[in-house]
Figure 1 (cartoon, helix red, strand yellow):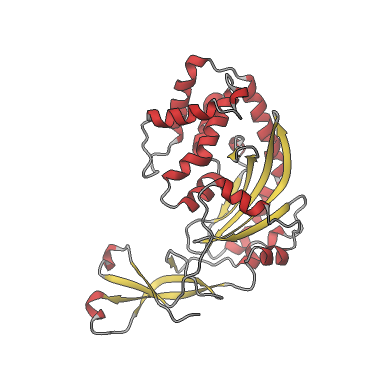
Figure 2 (cartoon, helix red, strand yellow):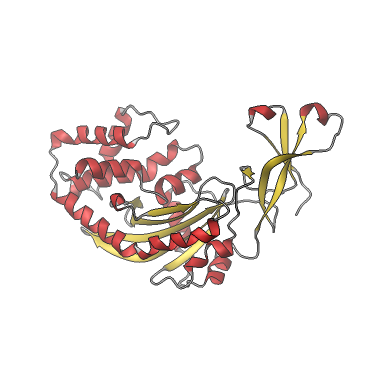
Length: 339
């Protein structure tokens, strides 16, 4: 570990005049701005091996582990006197053993680290998983692979599988199946009602025992894929009149925008409506105009790209809102158009 000290201002109002310190160094991590960037960066580098040691080595996740150090602080009043830093009980910083990179958020006593080797061990010899790669994120790491492609109404859909582990409590350990339309990188989690697309395990003391649950979603991979095909075909048969399209989109956005999401205006603006309408009449969706499937595709394309811009952290916006869980806008579209 290097000697450089990274000092960040605590957000806790009790320590408004306190600085948090850890003996760590800064390391560059991968940052993505669009889903297409995530896919293109990994499609070129994927390997067809489910040997965990090979996957971790290929993804830059081998030969290091995550360690934990207590948070230290120095009251502002004591800084001029050069007083020593004091331990902040029950608060810890997790950092990489190889370069000292400290993950952004502070964790509590109950937080249990899931190391790369144990966390991704269930990938060993998973049948059908190919083109596997991964990398580091500001808050942790990820691995992604593919279960091949399928045809949905003339579109090629690639069945991706994403595995994400955070080392600072930002998210749970998540396994997610993510069907993606190859032509425009649209995430097509349109069979969300099946509940088979994602599972998350909290970083509690029992996390390593419960990671076996993550294997369940891999077992349901074929069922989830068939759910996408069936939903698409059903939606294609539902006709939507020209005069009803805008009203349907407004209803979808209202019901699919959670009130708790900060920075997102729950009033459906003309701008949002026009963005989705533009996708609806785009060259790669226009053949589905007049059907519920066309609207679902347009909403999914919007959710896969523009919605990310509402997130303060684009990296988290892409992984959490788009790739790791069914998007609420897409789920709302399916429920409204296919009651």
